[in-house]
Length: 153
Image 1 (spheres, helix red, strand yellow):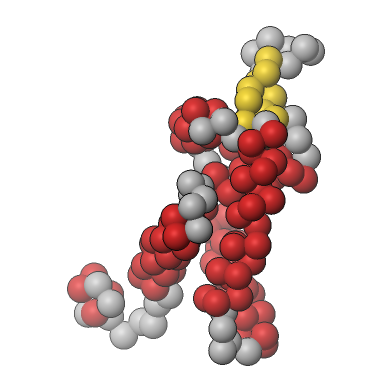
Image 2 (tube, rainbow, N blue to C red):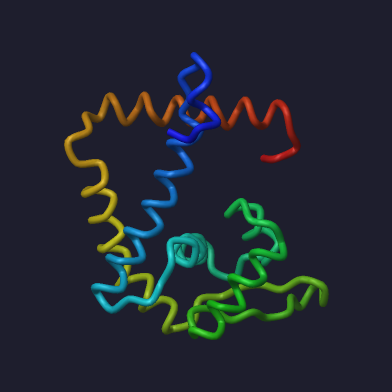
């Protein structure tokens, strides 16, 4: 645990959440590379949302993925360079970009989905379902507490 939290009697999940997220990102990247799939967790999440509803507004994707508009724009630009998505100006409003899966993006989605499912299975191995449910409840409560104190949603 980091020094910041060693001097307190309070049990905290905060450093564990950040460290676990970072480890998961590295692990996902390694697994994907080992299977020859050039995709990050963030790119997969965008593909997932576009698979569910292709042609989403770029601003809606920023909200759905909890990214700033600037961060999402950079992510979409990277995904365009990889040929996963394309942006089209909305016919109703020239200020709005809609994001669509390309044929390559659909292929990457279909190729990577089984690997992501396997990663989830591996990372949750030997954790009883009731413990996973408790962990989800705790993380939801932390998010609710954050939402009460900030404008982050």
